[in-house]
Image (cartoon, rainbow, N blue to C red; front, side, top):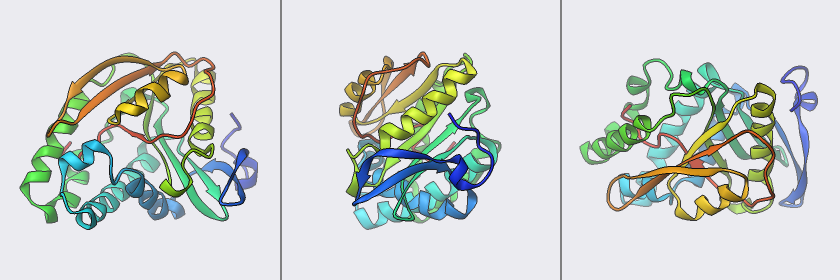
Length: 240
């Protein structure tokens, strides 16, 4: 992995696949792209089973909640986490990876207070369901040293074009240099096989709400096989 120093061009690596007729590059996510990264995450997770279960049921309301919520989370990752990466295509964010190089430092300080306000306009139901989902995920969080892949997402219109794989490769390269394994969770059952193809092992699962489930996955930090596009997230709720 390149050092996160110098100009954006010096921090980037060119992607191997075309995205909307443009090559993409992986660069460090910086504060000016916070809102754009939040929108990408919101669109990628709009139909995620956990978020559909948490609510609200109406898609416009859920999109509004997710956009506000992920704006908070991107801000937390920029301040307390990292390195954080984004894929840029035609000048726009095409994918996002939020990480904690020291996964034992997650969650960030005062996370509950910071993440609760986006839930207030949608009422107590989503807030309570979100708090429970968050509790389940945090209870499963590893106590051993690791890199936390908190969120990985690609814009829905360009998924399966190599963006997620390139972001995964960048995260894995950092874990290799640090000599640490990688931990993530996913609430999409089809993603379990995808991550296995990248060398992750399923180390557990749990029930969430309204029939949704979460799978906990672990990578030893070494190289893995080829794979395809995916979205994943740790802590999709707001009530931490």
